[in-house]
Length: 355
Image 1 (tube, rainbow, N blue to C red):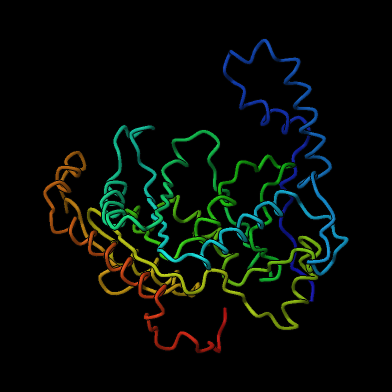
Image 2: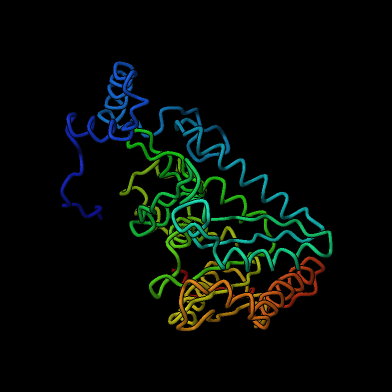
C-alpha cells in the first residue's frame, strides 16, 4: 500500500518567507541591525529551501536497527534523558510524584491574576511534601503563555499513518528548517517517566481540557505504542512504516503502571466529562487510577461572577479537603506499589484490541 496524498503544498516563496521571518523583529531596537538581520534571513531561507530539519546528526551506532543511519543529536539527547529518568523511576525506594498545573492563567501575563488550578496544586504539594521523603516535581503549563521560549508544538499525527512512524520520544521537533524550535516536550517526557504518580489539575475551558493540557496530551501519543528506533523507518518514511506495522506491531506502553490522580474544576458546565476524558486517556496509556478519592470534579463559584471566584475558593473548605484527599490517595497507592502490596486485578491481561 502507499500513503494517500493530494493536499495542497504549504511551501512559501522566498519573499513571503523573508517577510514572515523578519516580522518577529518589529521592535525599533532591531533597526540598526537591519544588515545583520538580512544575512540571518538569507541563512534561514537556505535552511528552509533545502529542508534541513535536523542539521546536526551522527551515526546511530550498533544499538539501533540501522547502525549507519544519520540520527539527530537532539533526539539522541532526549532519548538519553528519558533513559536516565527510567533508571530513577526503577531504582527509587521512595515516591516520586509529578504535579501538573494545566491552567494557562497567571498574574505574569494578560489575566493579571493567578489561577485556581495553581492554588489547588499548591494544596496538593503541601500534603505530598509533609512526609519529607516524596520527590515532588511541578510542571506548570501556564509558562507556555508567560515565559519566553516555552512552546509545545502541535502533534503532526504520525501515529495515524502508522505507529512505527511515531517515534518515542517524538522526533518531529525540533524542525530547524521550519523554525519549529524551543519545544518543551523533550523536558516533559522525562518528568512523566521518572514519576511513580502523576496528579493533573485542570480547569474546564469551553467544555474541554485547557489548551496547554491538550497540546501535551496529543504529544504524549508516542508514549503509547510509539517506535523507540527511528532507524527502522529511516526517519519519516511513511511507506516503510506502514509495511512494518502490517508485519505486526507490539505497541510498547512506555508509561505503563504509573498511578494517577485527576482534579477538574469549572464554573458552570463540563467538569464530569472533562474529568472522565482525562481519566480514560490515562487508562488507555495503561496508567492506573490511584483510587476513587483520587479523581475529583467540582464547581467553584457556580454561576457566580468570575471576579469573585478566588473568594469562592477561599470559602470552599470541603473542596480544599477533597483535593488533599486526592493527593493522599495517590501517595498511599504509590507507597503500596513500591512496597509490592498494590493489587490491580487484570493488569497482566493482554487486550485483544491494542489501538
